[in-house]
Length: 207
Image (cartoon, rainbow, N blue to C red; front, side, top):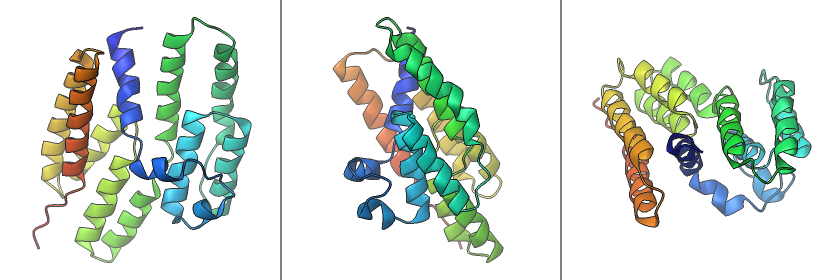
């Protein structure tokens, strides 16, 4: 397994939202889950499927999509379930499992976080600060480098800080790809990621 593969996986893992840690024990039918706003419900369902690709988690995501009128082809995820089952029977499949995880994460990014829909509504109502905040929160719930950088690049014209955020994220990618696998290096990477995400969610708005 290459360092690039290892740390691509690590970055995906690090980008999982903190709120998930607080409610991961709750099922999609639990009261804690039902009390969440739809945007958080979607994020939880995506992470449940990403971290535990099962028929049940796929069905939960499909049910949510149908209930919320989301155009989602859940059948295209089934090859991942099949591959995961195959790899689970092998003891030497770590590299392939990591690569599969990365492909699953890219699939997840096809399901745009509902924060982007909120951002569009805010923009229509000329609520610029809400538009920026919702867009940045949506970016924070993406998984792949490509999706994150693409959204930041699209935002630059309306929010110049997005250019700096993209530059800083590329530096974070370099740090990830050049980092060692020891505890000290991983802590440095984790701290850098947390600092970037904090900067991402600090909206600098000029009226």
